[in-house]
Length: 455
Image 1 (cartoon, rainbow, N blue to C red):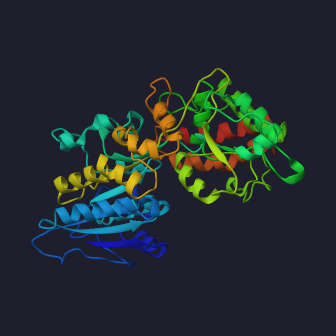
Image 2: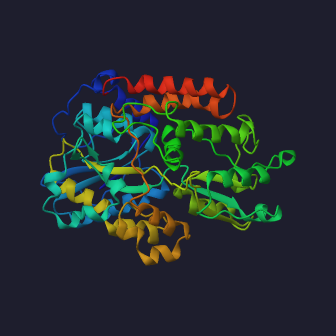
Image 3: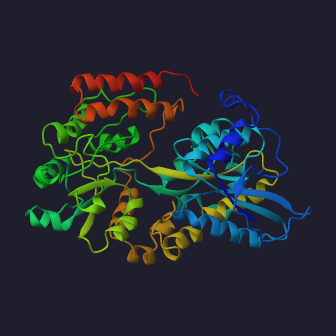
C-alpha cells in the first residue's frame, strides 16, 4: 500500500503522455493497466510487499488535511483485503484532478477508485471513464442509496445511469452568513436569524458599514454562476431553463431583480467593498460585519477567530417572497471503467462513502465535515458536538420545497460557462458598467456557451 502525492510536475508529465490533450475528449478508455503508474511522485508507504498473486489496485485521495479520512479508510480497507489486494494510495491536488483524469484515462492508467468534483464529474462520465454502478449496487444492501440526500445522489447520475457515489455535500458557497456579534451589538443592530430576507440583510449591512474605518457590512459577490443560482432560487426562479440549454439571467425578471439587489449593495448602499478594497478582506480579521461562505468554513473560521471576537452563523437570507434555495455542491467517488477488479473497486467505493467513514471524519478526525449520508448528518453525537447551524442545514436538505440540484449545463461545458461568467459578471456586480449593459454582456457570454453542442 503506497501513499503518493502528485505534484504539478507530475501533472505535466501525465499531460504529455499518450495523446495530446485536445484529442482526449474523443478517446475511449484503453485497456486496463497492469498497475496505476506513478511518474515522479513523492512519499510512499507499503502495508505489504507486492505479490504477483494479489490484485494491484490504486485509489486517488484528496490532498488536503480535511480529507485525511480518505487515506485512513483506504488503509483500513487495504488491511482487511491484504490477502487479495496490494492497494496504492495516492494524494492528488483537487484543482489538478480534472486534467489528470483525462490524461490517465487516455494512457490506460486511471486509478481503480477516483474522486471527482461535481464541476467536472459529468464530463468525465460522458467519456466512459467510469464504471456504471447500477448493476453492481443492485444486490448490495450496504449500498443503501436511500440514505444519501437526493440532491447529492443526483450528482452521481448522467443520462439516467449512476457513475458515482457522493462522499460529501455542502449547500454551495453563498449558503451561510457568518456575522460579527460584537460589531453588530456595538452598533445596536439586530442579530440575523434564519427567517431574515434579502431586504433585511441589505438594510443590516448598510447600517453596519463604517467607510472611514474600512469596515464593510458584507463581502457578498457571486463569483461563480452556480453561486448566483442559490440567490436565483431564493427569488423563486432558476438561472437556466429545466433542460439547461437556455440562460435566464437577463431574460427572467426575477433574475434581473436578484442581480439588481447585488449591484445595489455596492453602487447604492456602499455596504460592500470595491474591487480594489476587496483584496485580502478577511472576516476572521474583524473587518466585516458579515461574510458569505459555505458550511466548510464553520469549524475552520471558529478556530482562526478564537476569542478575538464573538461570531455566529445564519442561513443565507430568503428571497423577498420568503423562498429559499441552495446549490448542492457534491464530490463523488467512482470506479474506473478500466479496472481489472470491478467488484473489489466497488467494495472500496462503498467503504469510502459509508456511514462509518462519514462519522469518523466528523467525530474522530475532528473536521466536523459529515459526508453525504443522512445517517451521518442525523447522528445526534455529531449534531450535539457541532455548531447548531449544521442541524438547520440538515433541515434544509430534508425540505422538499427547497430546491438544491447543481445547475450543470446540458452540454456539460461547465468550465467554459464558468469562465465566461467570471470574465463578465464582476464588471456588473462592482458597478463598473451600467446595469443594462452589464446584464446583457453576461447574458450573451453565457448563452454563447450553452448554444454549443455537448462537449
